[in-house]
Image 1 (tube, one colour):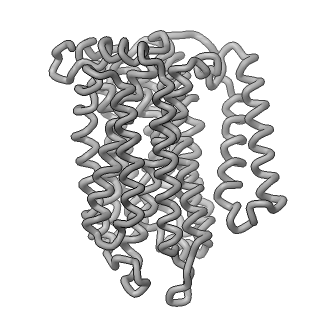
Image 2: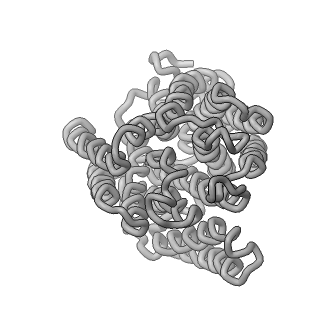
Length: 453
């Protein structure tokens, strides 16, 4: 869902008769909903079992897809895309099912693959959606997403085993609303700061409101017995370092998904565009998904020997180096393909390490909620990436054929920002205590063939 409409990004302003900064919310809305829904559904999964929550996620995803497929205007599309964001909690809910049902010697590899499937789905979804958009009306993308949701529903109903609830408690609607409000105002300021002016009253008001709401959110979460986000668990050093580093890795993962397709599809007459069709763009970028599928189990094997902190750091460094190299290698489709494979490989290493690091620091009764918070961190990273990279590209433009298009300086600036953020992720991962990383490597990251380390 996160990359479903990326091939359409250059065309969305024309298709929806809206500005580029406004149409970027067709992506941001999905990630924003995911950021809020993930910890909420993780909590509900611990309280009522993962299976009914998986079914609810599929139903909401279907509703959003149908709405988006049935409109030609921006607001209903953004609402539909927001509902599609309810598909994101499927990953942490699935991880909680795996931890309860998979034999201990296989659970590490299985959780790594499940965690990385978010990135794999995004990487493979890009070329698939490009093929559909190239040959059919753009609404077909959302009918296709509807079909995926309908196909997943009976699998959740009949194939996913029932896992008894692991904890008691109540839902925290106030916390969920505060979390949503803080994220909306933060992302609004980031996405509109370029057009409003970074020091303008609306921009400063957005950031100020976000800060105030998050302060109230933190105060509230520490008072309630069943918080949306368990801040006491979150501030444990291994959990906090992993989650903050996850934000940075997710930022780096999503940034390339916004940069590469636009460079590929811009006309050659711009002097830097590569003039590729949506179909060709999708095919050039398809190997990224395969790279992530290969590196995820490889990361689990290496982590079983060296610890997941090691593989996380390696993954983040690969992402950073790839972006840094990409500043000078944007002149041909094959160069972007190589960069995409490298970034995806780094993401595969980092994503496969996250569940093990998180699960080592929390009791099994809080598995779904803790992984939900980690998925929230990733959703926050992709949301900020969408808003920030979108703002950079919308603010650094040149005129071509009577329209404003992102400039090469804008693309390079986006790459520099992503490289710095990924390097920051590597530094943050080093704050995870080595003892914790080593323990969880032995306990949970046994290889997928069932052999203990």
